[in-house]
Image (cartoon, rainbow over all chains, first blue to last red; front, side):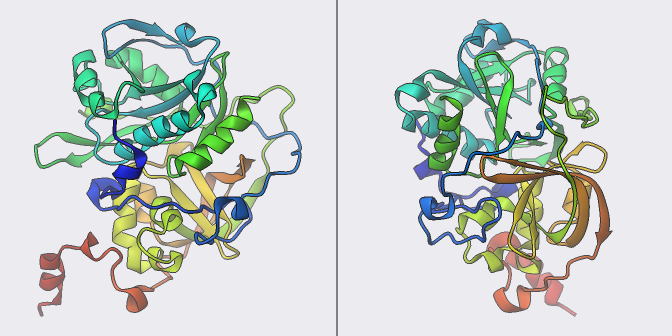
Amino acid sequence: MIAWSTLRRALCGAALLLLPSMAALAHAGHRHDRRAAPEAVAPAPAPAPPLAAFPVPVGVDFALVDQTGAPRRRADFAGRHVLLFFGYANCEAICSAAIPAMIETLDSLGTAGAAIDAVMITVDPARDTPEGLRQGLAKYGPGIIGLTGDVAALVPVWRGFHVSVTPVGHDPLGQPILAHGSFLFLLGPDGNVLTLLPPVLPPERLASIIRGYLR
Amino acid sequence: MAALAVTLVTGAARAQPGAPTPPMITVTGEILDTWCYLSGVMGQPDAVRGSAHHTCAVWCAAGGIPVGLRTDDGTLYMVLKLEGGSSVDGNPRILSIQANRVTARGQAYARDGLNYLVVDRVVEDLGLVNRNHTDFGVIPPFAIPDDVVERARRP
């Protein structure tokens, strides 16, 4: 399995960005000081007033297949939290960072993390057949469930989660590079979105946020 | 492949029962690449903004890395959508304003210690005001290949 810590390498869209040693990230209303410990810039929040409705979906259903070819519907995940990402198995940009981060995040949550499914729904059904997913996701280990389907099955899911998919070029092998939404969605046991998370957060920060939704 | 291009549904939020309406705010600041800015991998935050980091920021935005709007007091908003519900990733409009100073109006969300902004309208685009490449050069240097730099230098 590829660990987040080993992925501190070139990324940045078309492989321009070096993945970081994210010692600390900024949070709302704070100036950024990455030399400080995360705790120093992310104090435990005070009890918050009711939150505005996030512009995220409610009740998006799907009927897809996983990398083993098994059918997977939204209902199959009922009763479990899901950490959901949209990407594609051969993506060398954000996916190659976000997927290991998802896995490392759930690993760090221990038993609680084991009760959360890490799921990637493809934005590239042409290449991400079940077999394509199986081969492409193998580098991340067994911790990620890949879901695919035909375009007709996927488009409503993309739309439901406000994910766009735009070809932006081709890699040196002539394969398409797809720009796509990269926020992580944390789904509750009822399948609805609890929150969304920027994939640029380090696993420890992601785990801290997710832990708050498991109580 | 064109068949894959998906137009987003217009970004009307489905309100959760009892949830307040997000406030509409107007903020001014710089559009930036959140990964390089937050990670520190490419140096101090001031070096991964503005003209010094413009090329990399465009590539990052095109690659799906979330785009931020940093106000003058250092508050960072993760931009969820841009003008009319369009997604940010791969959006030509967001690519065209990378590193620019803009005034944007939109719905603000605060969640999990983070700020998010659904931009309803870019009220004003002041262009690439932060011309810090004179201080930092190109960050990272390989963002612009040497041969391109060389060609640009030729009379």
